[in-house]
Image 1 (cartoon, rainbow, N blue to C red):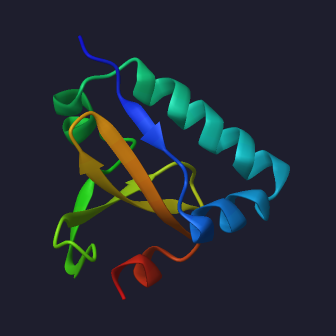
Image 2: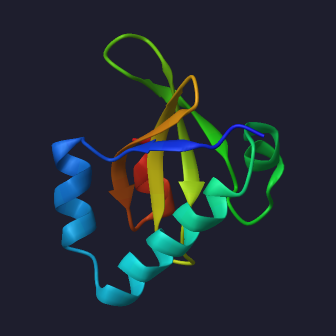
Length: 99
């Protein structure tokens, strides 16, 4: 099973991550640990992560953008490039991720 790799290099994502409360940062790290044990099909089907396409958004190169839940309170906007999950932004409000 190939490991899921993470790209955490988006400046907005980093700023948002560093500004989270410690409990939410811990939830993010636990989610990353969980993701590393999964393959893409498992991620797509996982009820806790709630992987959803954000049909109103695309990356600058036209790739699809998805939403995953990493805590009861927060979701992250991500995209996929081969085995990389690229984290783009963090959203506290479920609806704001779709705007």
